[in-house]
Image 1 (cartoon, protein in one colour):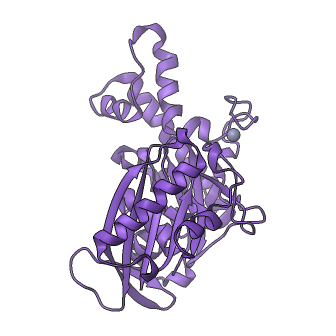
Image 2 (image 1 turned 45 degrees about the vertical axis):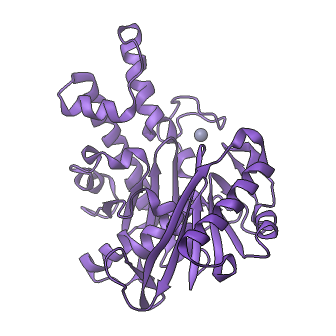
Length: 331
Ligand SMILES: [Zn+2]
């Protein structure tokens, strides 16, 4: 069985094809839990193209359809060999109509992406979900979930897990076993807009003190820039602030510490609601080793269950998790 998946980004689309196998085909194959059995995902082909968002929705769909055809050709299969194509979208996806309700990429809002793309590709099945949900699904089935089962012996169908994106924004996908919880409106896991600081910074969503205003990459960049004010020529990127902290720059150290305290509080709140097995972190900030140092001990101070912290994992599948999870929507 062949499946394809993509995480539609702002500037590029990357499409990957995988083969689902019952036996491993050697290096490069990913172990995956599926129901009560183990399967293997073999990467077959991957290609990228520019999104060209500025040219409009129809052009983006045409680019994507061409990319699917080219990737199939490279992988030596026909488009009709694909059991389906999954797409991770940067916004809330209605679980009934399968359209994007909101998000920062306006051109996709309200569009019939599944129908339009299927039409361009001769009736191929197309599935869509929120990109954080796709990330969580991939990590649960083929990344952190496999690791957690090895670490604790707890089978996949008992695992309650959250995949949290700490990047340009903050979002999450919640999984019980291999089921992604979408909620009434597809907005389950929109944890970036839960309040972390009462009366805090104004958020674009219209509320104040949202988690995203404190734990995202732009949040830590803004905090650094506002404190340095006119003393810096240009605003450092989040990863540079972590590098400065590692080089003992006092303000960067203070901000990284504050970020971790707030992250621990946020994760403890989520765990008090859900009593999670584990949280797996993705997005740009999740690549920083400093966020994990002592984090579980900090969380354990704030959880209601004395001394308990869910396991905290860094993403195991790298930047391709979103595309893998999208493909897995079709299994
Ligand atoms: Zn908000």
